Length: 99
Image 1 (cartoon, rainbow, N blue to C red):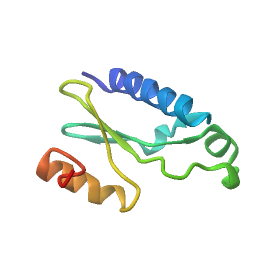
Image 2 (image 1 turned 180 degrees about the horizontal axis):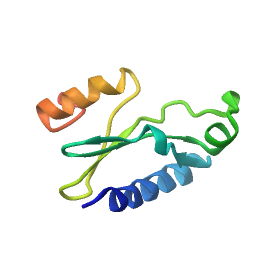
Image 3 (image 1 turned 90 degrees about the horizontal axis):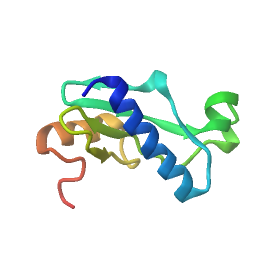
Image 4 (image 1 turned 30 degrees about the vertical axis):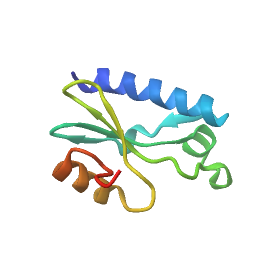
């Protein structure tokens, strides 16, 4: 899988999150991280990403990983910095090893 295909999967995931929350979420492309195992995507509300309206920024919108191998999505978390979750994923194959 390439980054373009992973981005399509990420956009579908964000659309599902939008529908579930009743909010208009979009990917924050400039924050996307490329890793050897896939890509880490970030998202927020369109009002915040495009207009900078901090009062309409999302809360609880955890970054997520799209695996290059199979397109599988792994949600990180918001209790810690994204680097914490990526280290867990790289060590254990999951962002939440105690779950």
